[in-house]
Image 1 (cartoon, rainbow, N blue to C red):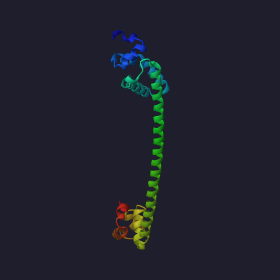
Image 2: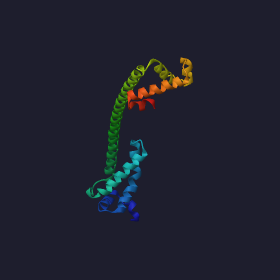
Image 3: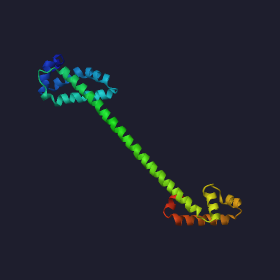
Length: 191
């Protein structure tokens, strides 16, 4: 079909309907640039226009037997592209709504998890403070200077007028008492 590019659409359509691949190729080459331009002007992404063009021509080939030989192919192709563009925007809207809904859900879930985490943290901190407050006075002082203030044994000994061995003993016993009282939570607290 050398001269097929000269054949009018009205003759190519019946050939396409009967499965003539050359007729399909001629129609594709004849309309691809026009339809691409039409779609690209209406879409923000040229790749989307290209995808729509391929979808339309694929649909043209797969549904060729349902076409009417007397039909004008030009309005058919433009309508198919227009329909695909509308469909494209509708899908984008649905995707955007889904994404917004999903983000809202995640925000609520994260907010709920954060609130739960903060509540547990506060309860745990209060429990730890209560147990520390129940330590013997000197032991509590040594423990708080070590853990809260970050003093070394030597600094604590100097500040409280104790020997380093006494400070070491107080810390050891304080940790032992707290681990016993707080049970498995002590792993989280001290490490």
